[in-house]
Length: 400
Image (cartoon, rainbow, N blue to C red; front, side):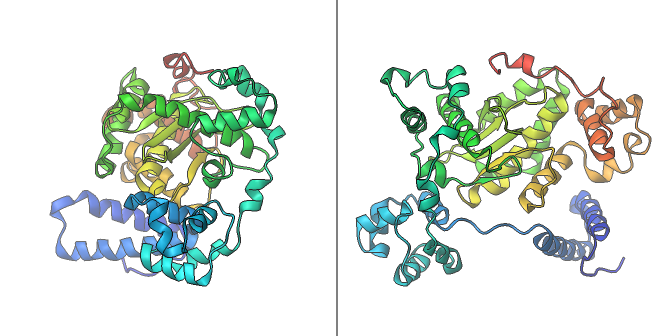
């Protein structure tokens, strides 16, 4: 097949299939096939960049991320800003960068000047107009999230929420609202509930930190994802998978979403670099649990290091964000490689028998295959007996 620029979705999927076929050859790949694979990869990446453009990172987040990456303190930025007070004001979004500062920071920290120019439009006003009454204070108190701070006799909503956020290590207007939320679970009406839930997740993750193994990002690979995917074969797979991730330094928190939010899971990093995956279990089904878990694993592997974003996901919604598309694709491949899926009996003639046959071959739970068929066909009335209804929350009794 002649190689040409990708212009249609069908061409894109055709090229993906050929890439997967070539990759499956491994060491048997000929030099000609290797060259073809490289060209196809470049064309696919170019198409994805056009189709699913990645939004530029927030300028302050870019600076803070570079500071964390290099182990810098605010005092180390004084040569770029002129004084410690200016460093503090810029990072708190109270002062825009001057042209001289942009030039110095760009050269000193290696951050694109195009990104830094955005600092001239300070977002401090947005952070300074927090409407405290919009936080779901009653639900937060009912869940016991404030039990550790309630004895401070805070009187107002603002004081209670400030204490709650502060206890999580997120200072309002700075660390908490500085962290932008990415994903289709985010909307203006749910933003306050999502930030409150996020603070709770970070608190829980920190409580688990002493039991975590060391995190080595180089171990996050497609093979690692596949290994976790095959844990679904076990009847206690969800518990085993979470224990396995925590052994590898990834804190996994199970915390149901606050009312009004359509949230399946989230992925982020704490200020010390600890990776965190959060799951809500809003659908008590095995297929939803496993796909959400691997989707968030891909975010930790591929996307969270790009800045200080927290990915909050409603997996019922189709997203045009390239990062979400990549998380969906890699999670799907870890369970059922596309080249196998298109030729399988479960795809061609879906039935309980063909689903169970493919599940046995791939060593994954049949619920995952049934869930994929339901999703791709848009028929959510089929295979209800296979998708693992009411089989997840019972493993996590503390989840509301």
